[in-house]
Length: 504
Ligand SMILES: Cc1ncc(COP(=O)(O)O)c(C=O)c1O
Image 1 (cartoon, rainbow, N blue to C red):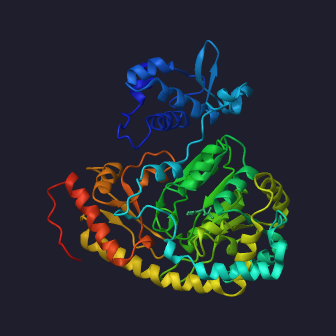
Image 2: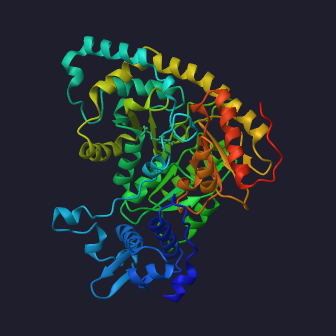
Image 3: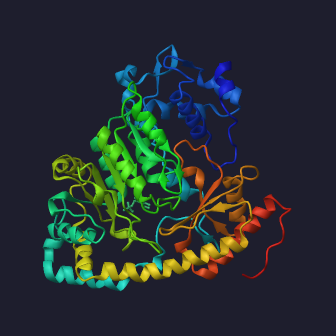
């Protein structure tokens, strides 16, 4: 008991970060780093709860979460033990095998950061929100969608309402080949698979190419939907830090060179305007990553969702466009360049992988909504998607510039951020000493402004110093007002800074 207690750090009791999750994260880190080796017996839940002065349920939930990840197992009458991956008993590999409905209802739910983030932000009319990851409603092309639905129904009648083949509507797959060609990606319709959202694509590819316990390489921080899928699929993360050129590859190279370590199953890369940091991967880094993937034969899942959202600088080719070996699987969506509610996205993968992806896709949904696919195809064909994106980009660039102006003028000197050349987000780093992002968040809500707490985007929830601000959500005046509110909230926590100007 004592050695474990000395390894655990103090738990935050801020009401925002669930205690069970913090405990699970700490235990997971101790297991992954070898500080709690396989076979270690963990204290009973009652005993640990008493020592940590938390509820017993929090310990039980934390243990359950790690059991589902295959990192712990329990032996009746003996206790809970750290598992070696290959030693996990069969019965604790999957979720429990409960007999009744009431027992099933107690099965642990995989953790969802997305869910949690939305939950902690109370809806308020007066709130200036920089929280979401999506475009504001007034960007949605309502009239064009109405025309598209009419045109599709007039043209196709009931055909538009049937099940589509699970690979997707063929004319849409053809149009996507033309659409991505302008980004340098050359592909054939039989390499394109339509799915119901890029989040589904990520999960589908993880399901197709990994097994529980596998490690996935990703930048850390990363897209939180990826973290949710990794948790649900019981996968581990090899998190790589980011610099101005994108994911740093040194840690990956070191891991790959260790002969005793199992190679990662997949590399997740978002080279263009990475969510949440906005960083763009340089061309040399892209080539380096491709060389490593090819040398060690590790597939790359490229998330190209923000590729088209550039405000300045020369476009760089996606990894898929540089890929000569067919090692890159490309995923993108119409959620950002058109509207999220259309829920239509695509995977471009070498034809050899298709059958596998298709079968798994079919198990998740018989087919992606037919009407949506036909509407997207009509909008692509009429040039409306490109036109819409062009108009939105001009407005978004003004908002990005307003955010940079407001940050420059109002944010405290010790806050740090990069100039995003594209994408939706300003990623702000708070000073190492002083209030953290969650503390600021609570004060920010009091001052009528919200943002995304950076902690959620980190694989091990260890960072407390970052804020993600979606600058596309608000008009320039509201951005200035929102950033000033944020600084006022900060000053209630750090009161000795110089006073703010009232007007920009
Ligand atoms: C980087 C990234 N990838 C994937 C997705 C998921 O996209 P979709 O809305 O199509 O599921 C998002 C959504 O915000 C995202 O930011």
